[in-house]
Amino acid sequence: MKKWIYILMIFFWTIPSGFAQLKTYAFEEAEKLSKENPKPLVIFIHTTWCNYCKMMENSTFKNIEIITLLNENFYFISFDAESKEDIQFNNHTFEFQPNGQNTGIHELATALATINSQVIYPTLTILQPDFSIVFQKHSFLNSKDLLSILKKIK
Image (cartoon, rainbow, N blue to C red; front, side, top):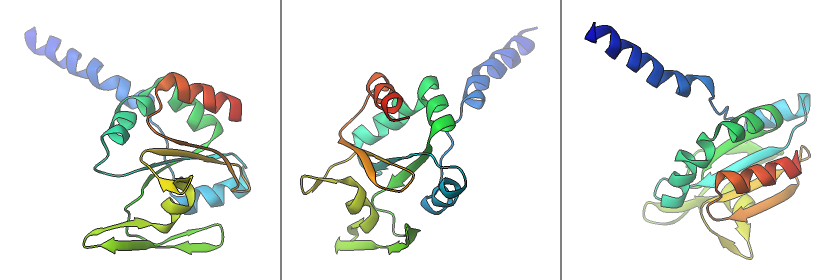
């Protein structure tokens, strides 16, 4: 009997993570899909070492309302600003730019996250289907604030 209770508990514990998954796209994929079905692109620019970025990943982007809104009305891209892979986007090849030993920033992160001559993590940038920037914000955004922004833009 205890065995079945444990099995049921594990089953119900794992179900919520399977229902609402945030669909993420690569830049190339989002660009192609946007031509077929125009939607704004929401780009979350982060690094692996940024604590506020991790907080957004583990709270803001786990919110069911945000997941639903992003999946239905936007193409969501989670972009590591220190990625070393070349990215083809908007008829341009963007590359990683080293600025020291084992450090650097991707050109695309610089293009999308620079506000007042600074790149700060996390940055949320929203592009219209023509890839023009319609919104940029440095800093942590909680679920309530992000929902408000996304609802205004959609």
